[in-house]
Image 1 (spheres, rainbow, N blue to C red):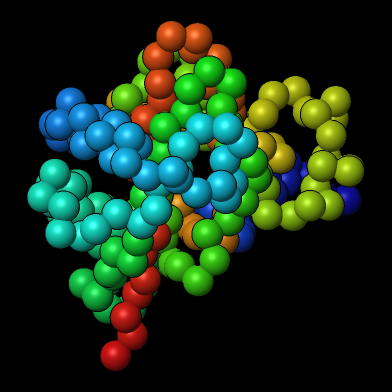
Image 2: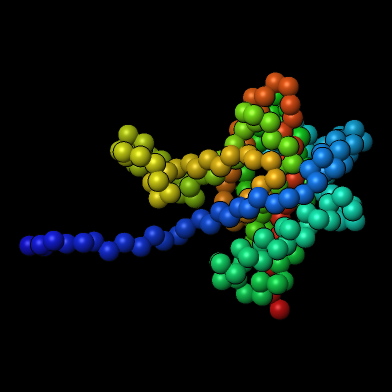
Length: 201
């Protein structure tokens, strides 16, 4: 018989999401992206509606402050996740997203990368959260919401993060995620998404 037992607990297989609010000239970024949208037809990948640019040029001077902040944040992410050669994290590609009313992004991952992320340039009210899905597809069958008093990081099948202007989110590239529809009828949701790689010497 166990008396006064205090069970010990450890959480395993965590999905590290990191974020920071950074100060950039978002008006300049917005103008740059919307001017580009006028010139490019755009890609159709995870987006349902909306406009997704081709990979942007690393030579674009409007993006240089963002590039610097992305690398700084990724190095910190790498330190916390015990990556080797944290200073060798490189930005591999970056693209722009413009979502108007009801535009969204379906569930997807970013293969052949190590850290992926998004930076929010413009986020009007009700423009849609980013949603991450638990890596196990089997979880939702047995750990249904009716079984829990409240949602936590360890019992939730989906986790919602708000789109906030000036915020950067970093996440494992293998983690499935989607973007809710922009339900703002008047204003666009504008973001920049990116991938990185880690050079192991």
